[in-house]
Length: 252
Image (cartoon, rainbow, N blue to C red; front, side, top):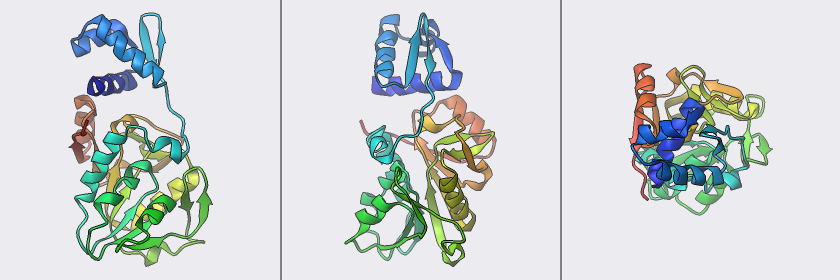
């Protein structure tokens, strides 16, 4: 049921406004079943209901502590897949998002690993481990518990990053990846420009959305890692643009 609700939410997100009868046909279920699923999504404040239909509610950015438990199974599955790309001896960047934060348990046993991060929670979790930690210098963003920086504050050109794991608040073909905060976007731009390989770690709810600030076009991302609730239509559109997408199954 949870998986079906995720697919329903993805369908509503893509179409913005949908009639209930359309959902019954699309998902081949009864009106009673659709009403139950819709009621749950309304309670979660992900959609709004009106007579005969529903509409998608565009989310606003919440503080990181509020978002840590949202879509947690998806985030853990994505993070585990991200960590599978990390080899002993790598120097990697871990972004300040709630998805990349979940990578830590899958990394602590790696040998001679260096983690560069702008996330205070990531840095704190790695204290006491055998992982070498470098935290970038700059201004603390309180809501995200992150550090935002630029060339005046930190010498990015001294870093040699094999793999960067980046988060996003929005992902679209037209605008690429985007974020709510200008300073966060600038930091990500810097990291992406100096990294050998860039992975975007984001759950399916972020697709076909543009938020305030563009970080980079899709062409600058090597692989997007997301959950399997992403619709086939969206996958087809993105792969047609040459974007490599890796889908992960969520443990329920």
